Length: 111
Image (cartoon, rainbow, N blue to C red; front, side):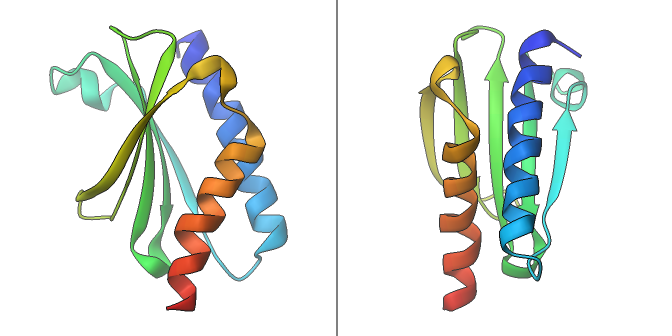
């Protein structure tokens, strides 16, 4: 696993643990795609956070061509993307990921 992917996955895992500590009734799944995209011809790695109960997904994509940036896409389990933003990798932290998870997963439960 590449160093950048490993470091980002640690941040996401810690945010996921905090999310679970605060929301024990909302399950999430975290996945690391370090070969899947490359086998499809895409020079990138990704981390996914799925919340099956609300059919939502957060995907963090690390493109080889943009080593200092991470694309964060919000969508659903079927693969539809509702929004996508680009962030400086060095600025991304546990609190930001946790906030994203709470906004995207918990607000959907309120509806």
